[in-house]
Image (tube, rainbow, N blue to C red; front, side, top):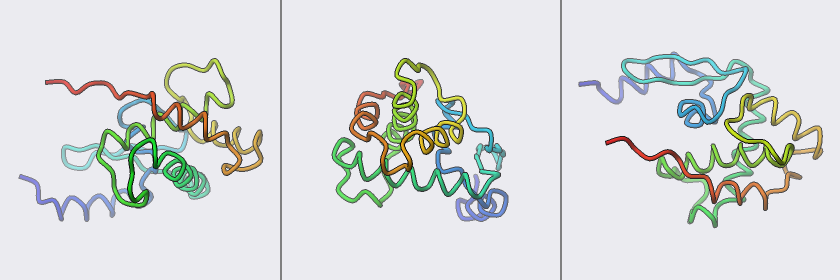
Length: 148
């Protein structure tokens, strides 16, 4: 059995810049050119290779949590949320951003940082994105069901 504290320490040591959208990356609804995947014990982790890209992703995730707080029924948007809600936020949010840029986009987001860079170029900043459309994408996103 793995000691959870030892795992967290090893995780921080091996993966110092944790990918903000790690769950979306690991469930394969998104990809990114700056991601690096690592295996720690029997678990998989995703890290970021670019500090500037990481900062952009952190900013987007804050905006997504703020905008989707009501939809996801978050009393305190800064607190941790259950895995399913986190997947809805990450996958649905990124799919929503991509659809705001390309309305007929379908399928997984191939490159998160590419989509975010294009969004900043088109809208001027992440705060100016059409969050009403993005929140709708978060609301309708359904993670694949668990296997039993």
